[in-house]
Image 1 (cartoon, rainbow, N blue to C red):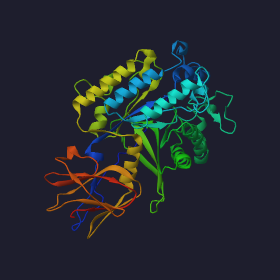
Image 2: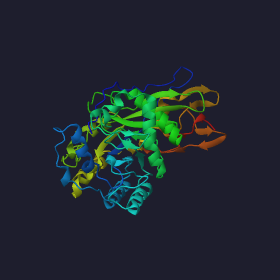
Image 3: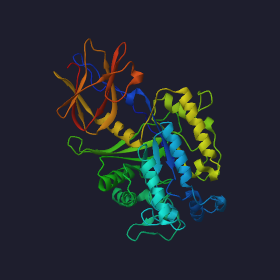
Image 4: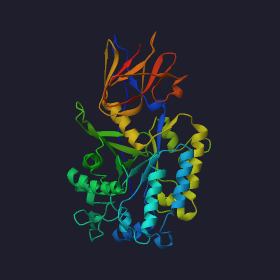
Length: 442
């Protein structure tokens, strides 16, 4: 809700090394395709966040939140979760799925939620673990997505002023340490119920005037709770086609050690034009991509090279049992499939690690070939070299030699493969952290 728009400068990806003796290296998108991801906000186990959230927001801003929340269903059933995730699996879709730890202060995912049995809660959590985690990042959307929680007592602060709501003012003046402790509290609830999280989603305007501390706090929390070196967070939406939608890699430390760490700010390129955050706002597929594939915000993002990260809110996809938002989503996916063959569905975790590695991998040439010092492991790392007169590329790392598979064109690149065009050699590698070597001859 109330997600702010970020205006930033486009990232230019130029050749990283070039000289008369050494051919230039230029990093391109993974598999030379456009990364794409679908973000689901305001999802959790069982609870319809709109039904329980609107009356709390109304306490804060009585004249703004006038929806009749009583007519909204209190639950988004697991039968719909199963149907949705199955359809997405069949279409190769990857994305982010929120699990709000203390949804609208109804109850705790790692304890119980009044109105549902312990068995129902356990089955709902197991469904997400079994059906979502292979293709979806699991995020907390902070703790409650409504009231700020006193993490010393586990109780919501009593007031509903903006200073005590997660969506608004509380987070704007907090230090990185304070935000990290708060985010860590949310992450531990999800860890308690068997989820592994590399990132978080901000509820509404959480931290939108405090992004540097938000990034650093996220980095602290993800490292402390899960030990991950690349933490990411979804905060902003960019609707201006002239502004960058590339992730921002922030607060990089330990780059010359075995303990490099960073935070990555993921940006979406669309609003929610499916069913709205409240499940009361009918959307329009044309705003994403028109029937002829010529216009729409996703078209703009894809043509710009992406990442094409688009968003929804779970109550709007369910749309009060009518599944209106889901039907619009299906239309968008069918149009993308019809008009594009160069999309690469990726989890946000993989997008974040790719951008961190792209910005901080160091390249050098020696008599053996192209040396790569990789501080952040990543998959499908893709770059070009000028076409070589004679080559049989091999990837060496940690004493192991791996030949690359030749594919017919740069459109067919996959992990650990290469392609040759009229003037370029494309290489696509899974890069572990540390020293890597690309040898152009065996």
